[in-house]
Image 1 (spheres, helix red, strand yellow):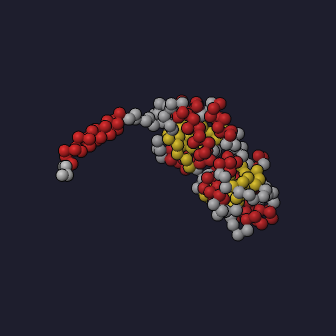
Image 2 (tube, rainbow, N blue to C red):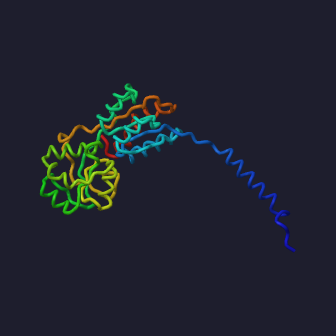
Image 3 (cartoon, rainbow, N blue to C red):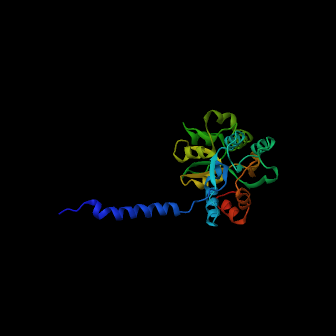
Length: 257
């Protein structure tokens, strides 16, 4: 004769529910680390640095990536960032003039190299107009916004110094940030892209075809600062950690200077 559920299962079910509820209540509450606004070109390396920081028992930072100009404007509008890392001295100056960063916390953390990238397996190329036009064919050269985003500004300056900008400007496809330009090349939607060396290293579907001479554009500096009024207790500690040998070794392994 079949037995009723209430007789045989109510007790075990209640115990399961109780244990599950106890586990939820007893589970540790994971602390949230400082909020870090960082230039898109730092994504791969900074993700790894953040993981190394967390392995020391620290709360994992909240990382938000975008073009430097976008990050600066978000901070100006009150976005709750504790730290900011820019790929442009000009935009860090812009934040400082508005008293949006703690002046004494501002440091030049890293450097980078500007390169011309293409799909994996493509041959190296010279900065010769005919060679570049042959490689482009009917395609475009991907770049971050040339009037706002540092990678785009550096790229435009380099092409101008090489006497190529006026001829290539009609063939430029501009993107919101350098990682978006990289993605166009990686997906085969653009035969060439101007990106940072670190971006090319982070994307297995592209190769570096040429490196722009350092004297063709302003020096590429990655700057770090605390945001004025930050309230997270670990902001200063993570700021200091980014300057340690452990963190810098990770950045160097990704191609940063």
